[in-house]
Length: 144
Image 1 (cartoon, helix red, strand yellow):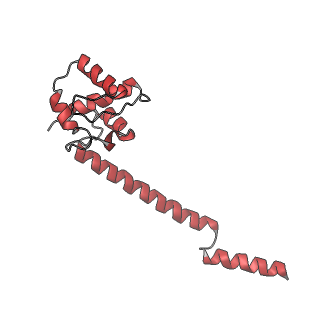
Image 2: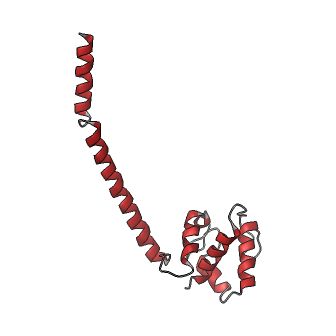
Image 3: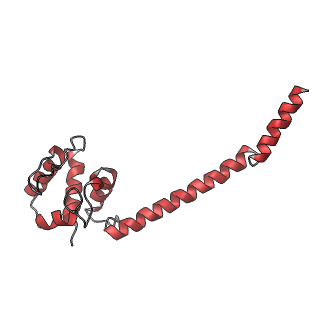
């Protein structure tokens, strides 16, 4: 008799929760897929607004690397936050030579202060130098 009640109880719970686990999972999977598509669409829209869309330029890999790093915590494209705006950096180092790009790459990795005031640039020793160089090239490609 107890088994009958247990089976009825489980059946009632399953019915109340949307039937079999398969249809509930497919609904939630479909919803998750729609959310992922919307998020990607928003990211694409934001990339178009900031000029970070992968349009085949040499700067595009740097934009993607910056999006995965913590750069946007202190820097924005056109607004000074804790650090200078990226466009201001690009203006200061317009037509930068390879030596200047190497210096800026080292500055990002080692950190420091003095070039933009008293607020120090945090060190990023875990970032690979080749990735940082791509980020620097992207920053220098930003024009006002």
